[in-house]
Image (cartoon, rainbow, N blue to C red; front, side, top):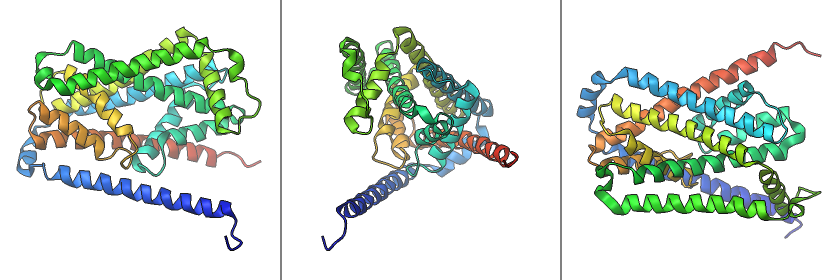
Length: 333
């Protein structure tokens, strides 16, 4: 191709596609946010703001911090199962810095990639284990959210059945994914160990086998502990959203949020928007309006949840700044 190396052409095409996809996600997030803003009743908001229950807001902030602590403990315990030692404080710092970048630069750099990169600096010889730990964390977190939603729908109060089709879909999707999760581990444990022995982990298939091989070594007890800590993390997060709803006088039971927030998070994971921005708030507003919440209040709650996360993210920025200052003050060798 006129003397131009094919790999350069491929990289240029990939870069163009990535740029187009990025701008498409930005456009979708902006479009959804603009649409949601049309629901806001500014006069109503003026009346609500002086009546904010501030105690619920700071409690929601604390609960979100506790959620990150639970995830930090989970990560350290999981790494220890792979014979990699990373104390809980270090895991927490990596999580907080990752949270900062994930929220302040949504879609530009992922929080998981940041904490993974920070941990790789400390454990240069265990990169595949670190990748495996982050992947398994997310997998367990997803399963726990689905379990929370499925169990809540089964024992939910009658108002959750106002639109049976929606909640039956939530239940069926959750149960199906949970069964697939259990089947995945059953099959993985039953396969011969030699299938996962690889010498060269540079290829995609080899890397996949290496990751699955490490997950295969986890005991049932270790998996249970990871799932339990995942439950704690997501429960704290959901209760925080419930408290923020109470702060603006949306009086729905906790069971409602336990049923719908996992679905909101699940939609956010889809790579169709800028870090889930707009999609998350839109999904939450949909469920709230469905049970009779005033549209303006539904959108306001989404904004309040987002702002709370931004404040926590700024805390992560402070953590990174202190890390930077500590390294800056180290004696030069």
